[in-house]
Length: 275
Image (cartoon, rainbow, N blue to C red; front, side, top):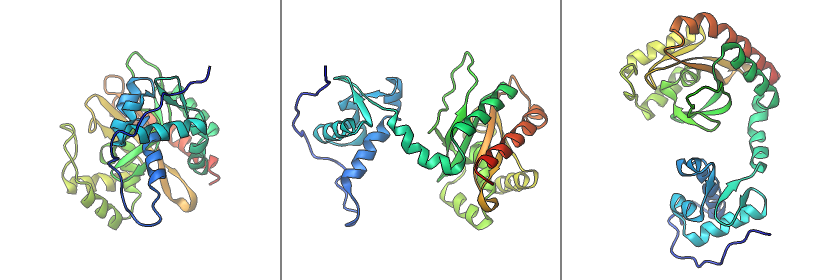
């Protein structure tokens, strides 16, 4: 039996009626805001499912507008619907391929990441820099009793992740200065570097040694190590890391055991990009 919704009236004005110029299409922006809702904590708690009320609340759109957008996305097979909940379909994966494949990420990179996690018995991730944050775009996770909060699409502050430090170290000094001015350092844990001079010292160390270690600067009990993935013209836009809990591995373990494995995997990932 087909899933349909009962008709609803548009019960209020939309809050994003934004005039950004003649080339800005509000309907497209609203549709994308609907899709982004599926990564919200509310949707994650419901196994990636979302009600019409959830969508309207999260986007600030009226229920009527949210309903039309969701049903349009269902009609073109980007979401599905069971009469109460909406959820994303695998068709969204095809869109991500347009971003991942030019960066050498996909089936080949997943195999490299999974082999790395098996070798280290720890989770490994690939991330990019996006403003003040890094975004995880590929990940292989070791299943343990505790559950990691990190999945593809997770964002974390760049200044306090090993991936972020590697990518920030790849920026020119002038560009990094602008970045630091736009994104002031914050105290996330007692270990977090908050002084700009100390941060620059750490960046210089990363540039010299070719890797970054985060030792409980983002979260107490967690440490990680990252290396760059070389791209076209020796540009660095992605980085690879492995993370662990402090009770299981020391900083020396990261340097002596994790680092060689990460460097080898990063070279293979670079080769999948054709460099």
